[in-house]
Length: 241
Ligand code: GLP
Image: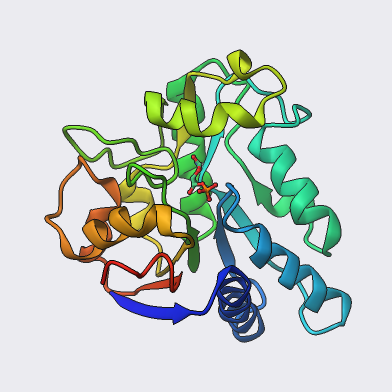
């Protein structure tokens, strides 16, 4: 795993936006694997800024998102479809028909998960996957477990994740307990992976993910086996190295 150190959150965001921008310039019809959470917001802001300057064109790009809460419609302000539209897609010239997020309102979990895997395969796989990491090492919504799950699946969210994310809901009790997420196998098939990590509160989990044993108790640790992973982290997140 390659590690790129950045001064702070802003510097991290700029470096990651540069990497994504270079990818889209080199391959205008790139398939980007995108993430939600607070960490990528700065990266999306930079990309929007450069799009507005005319430096980057998303018209041929396709995107697939990692995950979505079960039960939330894309109009719900905490759904990841809503997040992507409002924080990124509506500000750039991506064709919305080329953007994919699992459908949280589909109650037929096996068919939704199979469909999502087919979407990724039909796009020819992911060229560049952007990943954040949860405080328990989760990737997408692949929570600590006894095994790694290969494909897109429905997952019961851990208490730690519910505690971390419920604060964003008007009523924290409305936070869904289940989500659809790409599996670690779907993610590991990506040609290139960028992991973004910011803040001292992620320093222990980042160190364990990179240098500790490969274990489903820390799902991100399997990224050690991927041939092209770059971690872009700020100094606070790298303070335990
Ligand atoms: C959520 C998302 C993950 C994300 C994680 C970290 O649970 N499902 O994809 O990486 O949160 O979020 P943050 O960047 O806000 O720390």
